[in-house]
Length: 195
Figure 1 (cartoon, one colour):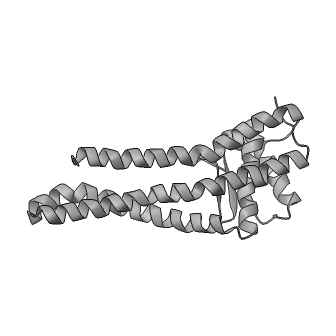
Figure 2 (cartoon, helix red, strand yellow):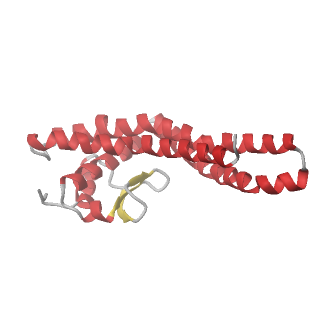
Figure 3 (spheres, one colour):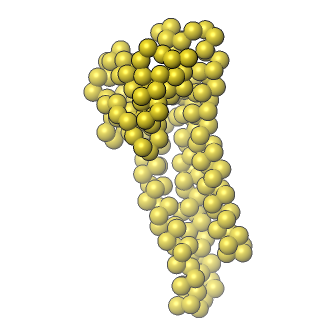
Protein backbone atom coordinates (compact mmCIF):
# COMPACT_ATOMS: atom_id res chain seq x y z
CA UNK A 1 0.00 0.00 0.00
CA UNK A 2 1.35 3.43 -0.91
CA UNK A 3 0.94 6.45 1.35
CA UNK A 4 0.43 9.99 0.04
CA UNK A 5 3.82 11.14 1.34
CA UNK A 6 7.27 9.68 1.78
CA UNK A 7 8.81 8.61 5.07
CA UNK A 8 10.96 11.75 5.02
CA UNK A 9 7.94 13.97 4.44
CA UNK A 10 6.01 12.19 7.18
CA UNK A 11 8.88 12.65 9.66
CA UNK A 12 8.97 16.37 8.80
CA UNK A 13 5.17 16.59 9.24
CA UNK A 14 5.29 14.93 12.66
CA UNK A 15 8.19 17.07 13.85
CA UNK A 16 6.41 20.25 12.77
CA UNK A 17 3.21 19.09 14.46
CA UNK A 18 5.20 18.51 17.69
CA UNK A 19 6.84 21.96 17.47
CA UNK A 20 10.23 20.37 16.80
CA UNK A 21 10.92 22.42 13.66
CA UNK A 22 14.64 22.70 14.49
CA UNK A 23 15.11 18.92 14.13
CA UNK A 24 16.50 18.13 10.68
CA UNK A 25 15.34 15.20 8.53
CA UNK A 26 17.81 13.78 6.02
CA UNK A 27 18.65 10.59 4.11
CA UNK A 28 21.59 8.44 5.20
CA UNK A 29 23.55 5.39 4.12
CA UNK A 30 24.14 4.40 7.78
CA UNK A 31 20.68 3.09 8.59
CA UNK A 32 17.71 4.72 10.26
CA UNK A 33 18.56 6.60 13.46
CA UNK A 34 18.20 9.80 15.42
CA UNK A 35 21.39 11.73 16.21
CA UNK A 36 20.93 13.74 19.42
CA UNK A 37 24.23 15.58 18.94
CA UNK A 38 22.98 17.25 15.74
CA UNK A 39 19.24 16.87 16.41
CA UNK A 40 18.78 15.00 13.14
CA UNK A 41 16.39 12.24 12.12
CA UNK A 42 18.22 10.16 9.52
CA UNK A 43 16.37 7.67 7.38
CA UNK A 44 17.72 5.12 4.92
CA UNK A 45 17.05 6.01 1.31
CA UNK A 46 14.29 3.38 1.13
CA UNK A 47 12.49 4.88 4.14
CA UNK A 48 13.27 8.52 3.30
CA UNK A 49 11.87 8.21 -0.21
CA UNK A 50 9.49 5.28 0.39
CA UNK A 51 5.71 5.52 0.57
CA UNK A 52 5.19 2.17 2.30
CA UNK A 53 3.79 1.33 5.71
CA UNK A 54 7.31 0.45 6.81
CA UNK A 55 8.73 3.84 5.70
CA UNK A 56 6.01 5.76 7.57
CA UNK A 57 6.28 3.65 10.74
CA UNK A 58 10.10 3.79 10.87
CA UNK A 59 9.92 7.57 10.37
CA UNK A 60 7.52 7.77 13.34
CA UNK A 61 9.89 5.63 15.43
CA UNK A 62 12.83 7.95 14.75
CA UNK A 63 10.64 10.97 15.51
CA UNK A 64 9.93 9.17 18.81
CA UNK A 65 13.63 9.52 19.61
CA UNK A 66 13.49 13.24 18.78
CA UNK A 67 10.57 13.48 21.22
CA UNK A 68 12.67 11.72 23.88
CA UNK A 69 15.52 14.16 23.30
CA UNK A 70 13.23 17.19 23.46
CA UNK A 71 11.76 16.01 26.77
CA UNK A 72 15.17 15.30 28.34
CA UNK A 73 14.46 11.57 28.56
CA UNK A 74 17.34 10.34 30.75
CA UNK A 75 17.68 6.82 29.34
CA UNK A 76 18.34 8.36 25.89
CA UNK A 77 20.98 10.64 27.39
CA UNK A 78 22.59 7.67 29.15
CA UNK A 79 22.54 5.62 25.96
CA UNK A 80 24.11 8.46 23.98
CA UNK A 81 26.99 8.78 26.47
CA UNK A 82 27.48 5.00 26.61
CA UNK A 83 27.46 4.72 22.82
CA UNK A 84 30.25 7.27 22.51
CA UNK A 85 32.30 5.53 25.21
CA UNK A 86 31.60 2.03 23.90
CA UNK A 87 32.74 2.98 20.40
CA UNK A 88 36.05 4.34 21.69
CA UNK A 89 36.64 1.49 24.12
CA UNK A 90 35.75 -1.14 21.52
CA UNK A 91 38.54 0.11 19.25
CA UNK A 92 41.00 -0.10 22.15
CA UNK A 93 39.77 -3.60 23.01
CA UNK A 94 40.19 -4.83 19.45
CA UNK A 95 43.75 -3.46 19.30
CA UNK A 96 44.55 -5.12 22.63
CA UNK A 97 43.33 -8.44 21.25
CA UNK A 98 45.27 -8.00 18.02
CA UNK A 99 48.44 -7.11 19.90
CA UNK A 100 48.13 -10.00 22.41
CA UNK A 101 50.37 -12.35 20.37
CA UNK A 102 53.01 -9.61 20.09
CA UNK A 103 52.86 -9.15 23.87
CA UNK A 104 53.43 -12.88 24.33
CA UNK A 105 56.65 -12.62 22.32
CA UNK A 106 57.84 -9.37 23.91
CA UNK A 107 56.93 -9.92 27.55
CA UNK A 108 57.17 -13.72 27.82
CA UNK A 109 54.98 -13.58 30.87
CA UNK A 110 51.69 -15.43 30.71
CA UNK A 111 50.29 -13.38 33.60
CA UNK A 112 50.67 -10.09 31.72
CA UNK A 113 49.06 -11.55 28.62
CA UNK A 114 46.16 -13.02 30.61
CA UNK A 115 45.57 -9.62 32.26
CA UNK A 116 45.73 -7.87 28.88
CA UNK A 117 43.24 -10.30 27.36
CA UNK A 118 40.94 -9.99 30.38
CA UNK A 119 40.93 -6.20 30.16
CA UNK A 120 40.33 -6.39 26.39
CA UNK A 121 37.35 -8.73 26.90
CA UNK A 122 35.84 -6.37 29.49
CA UNK A 123 36.26 -3.46 27.10
CA UNK A 124 34.69 -5.39 24.23
CA UNK A 125 31.79 -6.32 26.51
CA UNK A 126 30.98 -2.65 27.15
CA UNK A 127 29.08 -2.52 23.88
CA UNK A 128 26.91 -5.35 25.22
CA UNK A 129 25.99 -3.15 28.19
CA UNK A 130 25.23 -0.28 25.81
CA UNK A 131 22.88 -2.50 23.79
CA UNK A 132 21.08 -3.63 26.95
CA UNK A 133 20.58 0.00 28.03
CA UNK A 134 19.33 0.78 24.53
CA UNK A 135 16.44 -1.70 24.57
CA UNK A 136 14.17 0.30 26.92
CA UNK A 137 14.95 3.47 24.94
CA UNK A 138 13.88 1.73 21.72
CA UNK A 139 10.74 0.27 23.26
CA UNK A 140 9.79 3.71 24.58
CA UNK A 141 10.35 5.32 21.16
CA UNK A 142 8.24 2.63 19.51
CA UNK A 143 5.35 2.09 21.90
CA UNK A 144 5.11 5.17 24.14
CA UNK A 145 5.84 7.70 21.39
CA UNK A 146 5.48 6.47 17.78
CA UNK A 147 2.47 4.18 18.19
CA UNK A 148 0.35 6.77 20.05
CA UNK A 149 1.29 9.36 17.38
CA UNK A 150 0.22 7.03 14.60
CA UNK A 151 -3.02 6.00 16.33
CA UNK A 152 -4.09 9.42 17.65
CA UNK A 153 -3.35 11.14 14.36
CA UNK A 154 -5.34 8.52 12.45
CA UNK A 155 -2.47 8.26 9.99
CA UNK A 156 -3.06 4.55 9.52
CA UNK A 157 -6.15 2.48 8.88
CA UNK A 158 -7.13 0.28 11.79
CA UNK A 159 -6.25 -2.76 9.70
CA UNK A 160 -2.64 -1.47 9.40
CA UNK A 161 -2.11 -1.04 13.16
CA UNK A 162 -1.10 -4.68 13.88
CA UNK A 163 1.52 -4.55 11.09
CA UNK A 164 2.72 -1.18 12.42
CA UNK A 165 3.16 -2.73 15.89
CA UNK A 166 5.21 -5.55 14.34
CA UNK A 167 7.43 -3.08 12.49
CA UNK A 168 7.94 -1.04 15.68
CA UNK A 169 8.75 -4.20 17.64
CA UNK A 170 11.33 -5.14 15.01
CA UNK A 171 12.82 -1.62 15.14
CA UNK A 172 13.15 -1.87 18.92
CA UNK A 173 14.58 -5.39 18.89
CA UNK A 174 17.38 -4.65 16.41
CA UNK A 175 19.48 -3.87 19.49
CA UNK A 176 18.82 -7.32 20.92
CA UNK A 177 20.36 -8.70 17.72
CA UNK A 178 23.29 -6.31 18.08
CA UNK A 179 23.80 -7.47 21.68
CA UNK A 180 23.78 -11.09 20.50
CA UNK A 181 26.36 -10.23 17.84
CA UNK A 182 28.56 -8.63 20.50
CA UNK A 183 28.31 -11.78 22.62
CA UNK A 184 29.24 -13.88 19.59
CA UNK A 185 32.19 -11.60 18.88
CA UNK A 186 33.48 -11.91 22.46
CA UNK A 187 33.02 -15.70 22.42
CA UNK A 188 34.82 -15.86 19.06
CA UNK A 189 37.83 -14.10 20.58
CA UNK A 190 37.73 -16.50 23.51
CA UNK A 191 37.71 -19.46 21.10
CA UNK A 192 40.58 -17.98 19.08
CA UNK A 193 42.60 -17.56 22.25
CA UNK A 194 41.41 -21.00 23.54
CA UNK A 195 39.99 -19.85 26.87
